[in-house]
Length: 375
Image (tube, rainbow, N blue to C red):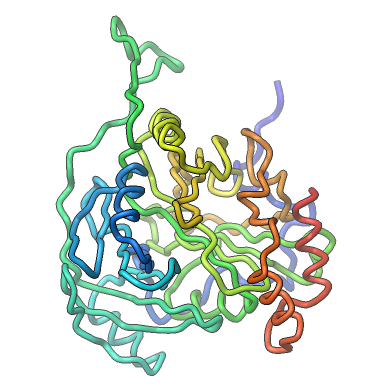
């Protein structure tokens, strides 16, 4: 019988492990510690089409007028997503939840921002900020919490011991019924400065660092980042960021009940002609069972179940970044997921990034990024 690793997370470290000169996984004295990701904001030209996909994906309308669509999951809390009517489909930014308005005042003093009353459904207070890469975000507090809705419990499974007797399993092919928002993934050409900012101002801590092949000496190029709730476990990552030529949204992830919800929800989306980007599989960093889809505007979203939950005692991991290292099992990663198909927009961003001395994406980093897709 194979010996067990010291801990599952230690077993994911690179052969070198953390080095003395590595960047820290957390700030020593952050301004505040946000509690969670509150919601994400998008702009879409067609709110009716956005709502149809959202319902097929398993989100529920919480509020709708001619200008805005608010979408929620079945668990209590804030909405998962706010979609505003606009000229094009684009990501506007994330909102993080602070513990109190007092925290917002402390954050405002540290950043030179101001605390505002939030004049939108749910009310509350907020601070508007830009991170060093130029991404717009909000930190909110005291927003009215939506009540929990009826939702499906995870199925009883006959694994290890008999739990289900005289009761066949017949999960319905239906929307996956999202429970909550899990995380968002962003790309930035200013990775270290932006990560410093989230650590110092929002108190986020890193669960895992990844680095480009052959570039361990240059440090991390991706971070899976969680909220610091002390002894209370938090998602392995609420925010993930990686170094690249663009400042952009990559994908967001929404928790569902279990593997059957991921699978039957995917079959439901496939039956309706939507585009699967990658899945079904199980990730390494975060361990989620995943399934990625594109909405009609090609925005990528993920169903997930069974993700890792870490408290503040887990030490950061260091691992080489590779396409084959994205999953423990499942189909090979697709070009659709990686966004490998070149476009005029991608070429413009790449040229601009390589010409700009005020970022971290240079020719050597480009070579490393290209190696990721082949390993």
